[in-house]
Each structure stands twice: as C-alpha cells, then as structure tokens.
Length: 148
Image (cartoon, rainbow, N blue to C red):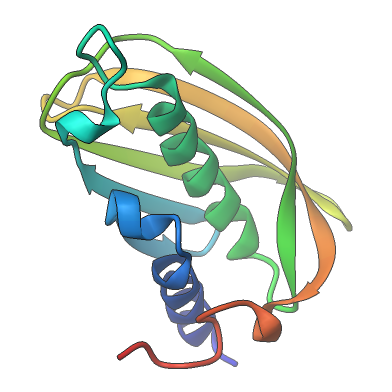
C-alpha cells in the first residue's frame, strides 16, 4: 500500500466512526500530520452557551492520533495519555485542529496538536503518547472499504 492509499484509508476509517455522525468532521492526513475541521453548532455548547471542553479534546486528540497512525500502517494506535489545555472560549464558527508527530520510537509516538477558531486564534493545545495496539487496521471500520 502506498503512503497516499494509507492516508486515504485512514480518512475513510475516521469518516466511518459512528461518533463522527455527531461532529461531521472533514479530515486530511499526510505523513506525520493530520488536519480536522468541524462546524460548530449550539448542540456542542455547555450550559453557559460556549463550546464544551469535550469538543476541544476530541479535535485535539483526533488530530494527534491520526498524525501518529499515519506513520503506522499495520495496526490501530491507541491513546495512552493526552494532556489538553483550553486557552480561549469559542461559541460559533468552525474549529480547525492540526496534529503532528514530534517523536517516534519502535512502539510509541508523541504527537502535539493545536485547535484554532475562524480568526486563526489558538483556542486549545494538547499533546499525547500513542502506542501501537493489537487491532489490525484492515479490521477497523471503513479502513479497507469504500464508503457509499
């Protein structure tokens, strides 16, 4: 499988995940990097009318995760730990997260990610450790098949 075929398969896998029916993200993967974009809706708000921290976490973790999995072609990687920093509240518009691998060893990856608002202001940042799992990518939902 070529790098581009692997990246496209990861993008299909992400789109196939049931959780993403809620967020409706768009993702692109390249070598050691991933970029995700979502449109915010009031459904993502907490009781004080701003975006809930879980949305920040998802955007940051997903971008870092797929940056890491772009470098692993056989198995699904797992988030071993992830630290999230929420730096600015956001209410509406779009979020864009960018993840990149900053260190790779035989069985783990360290990746960082940043999430931005429509004005390209940083609203959150995170970093995590991702380890190689046992689940074959070819068995993951959407990885091997074309979506309708």
